[in-house]
Length: 581
Ligand code: O2Y
Ligand code: MN
Image 1 (tube, protein in one colour):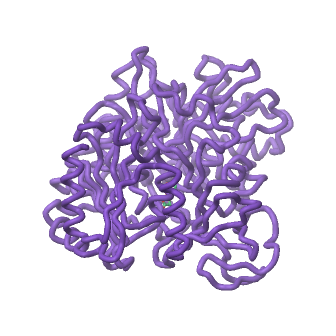
Image 2 (spheres, rainbow, N blue to C red):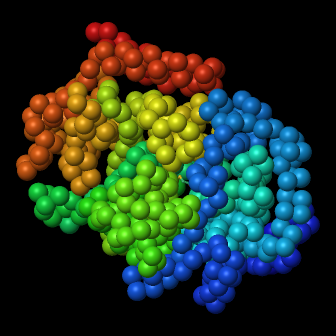
Image 3 (spheres, rainbow, N blue to C red):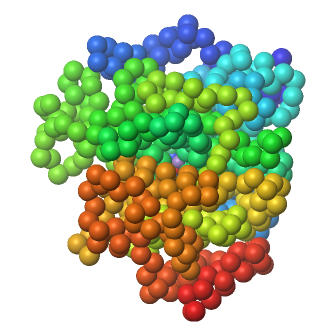
C-alpha cells in the first residue's frame, strides 16, 4: 500500500464520516454489485437490454446540469498567479470555507476510493489520480472515462506523484457548491454537484486545470484538444490536434466521416476533448488522449451528424438527462427521428411531441467507452503518443474569421490561439450566444495566469525546429440571411486536407493581414454544394470586422497587465499595422 495515499484517505474519512470506505479495484464483480446498488438507490435505471445492453440512465438534480464556472476556483497562493480569467480563493480561505462542508457529509453513505490513470497504462506521458467520492454515478462514469482500479495503484506504487480529488455530493445545494483546485499540492475539492466536469475529477479538473500547471512546470502541454489521424488515399496517416471551445463540434470532428466526394480518405479518432503533448526525441510533438471514453453532448447527435458517436453509445454506456421512451431507449432533440410516442423527460415528467419544453436537457450527455467507437484509431493507446503535424484553433464566429487560415509561424500561431473568441453555448451555465474570448479554448480550464500560459506556449516553440504548423478554422460563419455559409460535418475535411498540404509545402494560398488563406480552388471543391459567392465570402477578410476584432483583443489583453508576454503584444501591434497598410 501507498502510505501517503492511506493517510489522505484516513484524513478525508475522518472529516466526512462515511459508513464504509470502499477501495475500487476495477473488477467486473465490483462493477455489477455497484450497479445493482445504484439501481436500488434510484441513481440508475436499466435501459432496454435488447437495443442498449448494459446501458444505464441517470437524471441529475435539475439545479445541477452543467459545469458551474462561477463556483469553480483556483486556490493558488496569490490572485496574480491565477490571472484575470479565473476565480481565485486563497488556500487559507478555501480551507476555512470549503473543508467544513465535508464534515459528516458522507454519513449514511459509502466513501469510494477510485485510483485511476489518465492516459494509456504504462505510457510515460500518463499520470495517476485518486478520486474519493460518495457517488456511485461518479464511480460508474470514472470507470468508462479513465482506467481505474488495481492497475492504477500498481502504476502509482509508493510514489506521492498523484492528484488527490475529494468529491462529495454534499446536499447538492448550489449555495454550498464549490469546485476548488490547489495547483501547488495537486489537490481538488469538489462538493455540492454530482454532474459531469464538476464531479468526474479526472477530466476538466485534473487533465486540464491541474495538468496545465504540471505541464508548465515540466515543459509539456495539457490542452483542450481533440486528436485525429487523417488517412489519405495512399494510406498515409497524419495526426492533427484541434482546440475548439465547448460544444463547437470537437466530438464531431474527432469522429468525422469523409464525404463521398473524397474517396480513399479516412479519419481515425484518438481523442475528442483533451490532449497531453510532449516533444519526442526526434523533436516532434507527440500527443496522447488521457481519457478512456467520451462524455459527449447528446442533443444534435444523430446518424447523420455523428454516426460514429451514436454507434459508440449502443452498449456499456451511461445516458444522463436525456429523455427516455417507455421501452427504455434514449431520445433527444436532434436524434434524427421523431419521438416514438410519449416520453419521460429529463426532469422525470411525461412529455409529448409538440410540448414547449425540451424533452432532453440541452447539455444532456452520453458516457461511452472510446474503444467502442467505429472510427477509433489503432494507435489511440500507443504509449508514446501520435506525432502531431498541425494544430487547429477555432471558434464559433458568425462573422470576422474566415473558414480557415494559416498562421505565419509558431509565435504568430500562439497569438492566433491567444486571441480566439467564440459565441457561448449551453455546455456551461450562463447566457447563450454571447461572444467571449476563449484563448486556446482554455478559458475555463487553464489552472494559472493565462499570460504565463501564453509565455509557456511561446517557450515550447523554442524547444524544437519541428513544431506543428498552426491554423485557425471557423465552421460557423453566416451570410446576410443568418444561415451558415459552410455545410460543416464531413465537408470540414476539405480545409483540413488543404492545411495538411500546406505542411508539405503544397496548397495554394493568398497572404492576408491575418495569415495565409486558401484560394477557392485549393479547397478541393469538387461536388461541394457551396456557391462561388458563398465561398468567396467564407474566405474573405473584412477590414472593418477586423477593426472591431482588434479593439476586442486590445481590451482583453489589457486585463493581463504586465503578465501579458511582450511577444503577444508585438503580434497584436503587427496585425494592426498590417491592416493599416
Ligand atoms: O463536463 C460537463 O459538465 C459538461 S461540459 C463538457 C463535457 C465533455 C467535454 N467537454 C466539455 C466542455 O465543456 O468543454
Ligand atoms: Mn471539452
